[in-house]
Image (cartoon, rainbow, N blue to C red; front, side, top):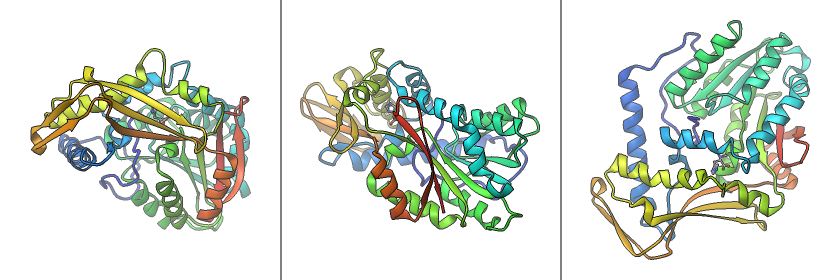
Length: 353
Ligand code: AVI
């Protein structure tokens, strides 16, 4: 899943184009160069902090994206199955909200990835002949190309207008062409998969404020939030028995070796996750299993590690209903839809401006 986990991505394309823009060799090289530079900056600044820190948004190179796909199928990782169930059982209620007043709508997906869950909605909305356009946004042109081709193959009549851009630039473009009158499409922004849980509290508030400022009254946001539950269930989701989450976390070091010629010995680091039920934060770490020094020639860096020292790599935040209602209130939105799975593990929430 090539998902843009960070709203501040590279800006590439402009206004909506109805043609599939296939990636040129030049832009693919540019994308790789930008990604490598961003990683270099993260390593340069993150590994001199105390505690050491690397952002989870660098997990998603090709191998990391492949591992995440596998994690989503593990018995322990309930999030994807829960959201899938919600979208399937609530698709009609969601359509009633999105198409309220018979207005056409643009279904704008942030970090579309492979669109697997979204396809539940697309398929149902097509079947009901809803008047909508699907607008997937991603900073990875190859992910967008793959998704668009796939959707056009499956539903040749569905209007798809992919946007290769960062989220906020793309929303600027879209909202410039919309207003609250009945003739213009309502914007319905999708941010699924609990991607919001990987943001800090400050980033979360900023994210919704930024979106709010780009929407018109009546526009909506559908977000997937993972809910707080028995800590053991959450803990297990980030410690699967097959060791895929461990491989996913360690892959970040492999990527740094590959992209920046570093010499991390992957067997000298372990995966450790802890869930704190008092604040809803699952945190992932890489733990140095011995005293060691890692050399990163591309950055002219030598990084010492003590035995037991950690690199903090990810926050996966779990929410309460109060957290979500407060978030909506603090950023100006009203909560107009609340859909959970049968176990109450996960919720998809509609915010309306
Ligand atoms: C993408 N994101 C919502 C996942 C999560 O649950 O935080 C990434 C992940 N990390 C470990 N397992 C899955």
